[in-house]
Length: 66
Image 1 (cartoon, rainbow, N blue to C red):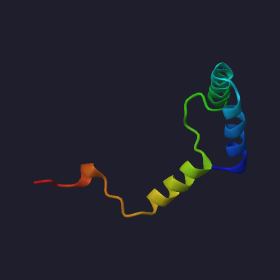
Image 2: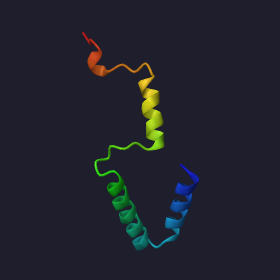
Image 3: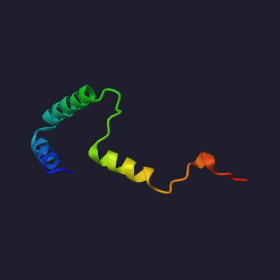
């Protein structure tokens, strides 16, 4: 979690619950506007994907279980 994310979380935690809900809806709409199909990767997701592409992962469909 970045410093900015931590600061935002701390600020939202100071708000009353109704205002926290408003902040949640605002952030949700902002994310949907940025990535409506949920296809973009966060920096952490990108690192995990690159790491998995270079791993010795075996697809379950390629295993002969008999």
